[in-house]
Image (cartoon, rainbow, N blue to C red):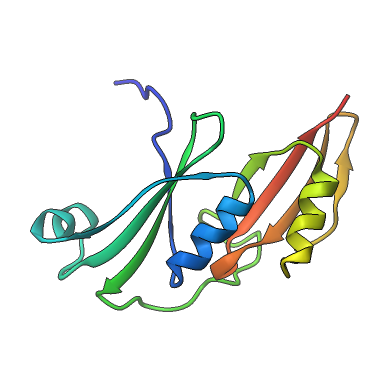
Length: 145
């Protein structure tokens, strides 16, 4: 068995429209939206009575995708949206950007704040974390040198 590629990363959100808007502002393209429910999805995710809306967003180069999901039922079991970066589990999604200063300035103009600071890693990258909707940590990376 061999993995052929990463199909997508799934992120569960409470406000689907806000998440779509945030990732669109970063440059992802909305491929489509839809509702899912029924026994087939219950069996896949291991929950009963699933009703959800999903949106698939793609990077501009067409290689990578995010699936944003808003569950209407069943209700969730807790709120971990502001977990720190060192909490076990998937903690962030990283995107390569051009002109990280301009990207950060644009996000700040919309009320998004850095988690820490914009830093340079050796002579290779400029990096930062921002906190997106639902507490999602998004890493921005600009290759330099």
